[in-house]
Length: 266
Image (cartoon, rainbow, N blue to C red; front, side):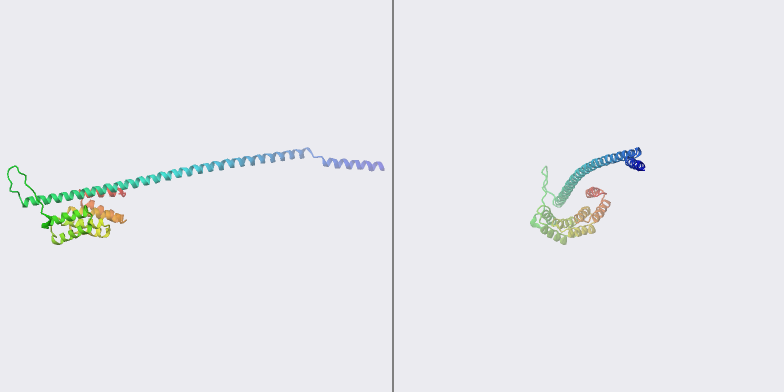
């Protein structure tokens, strides 16, 4: 009986020991699990490395784009400055051209006065002696002399109010004179010289309405259009210059108007 108990105890002990020893399948599963953990850790490290590399590359591209954008902006700023400089030179050339045309108009006026004086007072000299042409003296207050003095005061001396007053008196006393359109035009120029642009525009309109067929009307159209542009009203300026080109297509003022319209995008 005692031997049987001992035998049963040994059997139970062996069974318990057998349950504590892992099977081959369990060992294989354990190894697989460890391998999966190792591979997962390696994958995570690889992903972290790739993410870091991509983040660095993205930052580098952003830096490159920022530098490229800054360079592009600098180039645009330089182009704007260059364009402003070109516009400034263009405006200077326009001003010089206008001054030359005005100078030419004065020369034509002066020449016309000299011819008139020659026709009215032919020289009695004979032979090879050249006739001497004398303009009326200032003290004689001839209309032509008053006109030339007034224009000189406006254009050269910048005495706008004084010259304008003389021209207004000239027009009051000589409304039908051949120089009346010129006098009316230079009154507009006197206002423009004082930066009284609204008054200048109205005066140039008066020239256009009263002397629409006279060559000075072309100059009035041009200055009126440019004055509107100075006031920031390019739409009105464009319409007036287009009217100038249509009404006086062969005039020098029309050529200037075409160039300005082209610069404005038309």
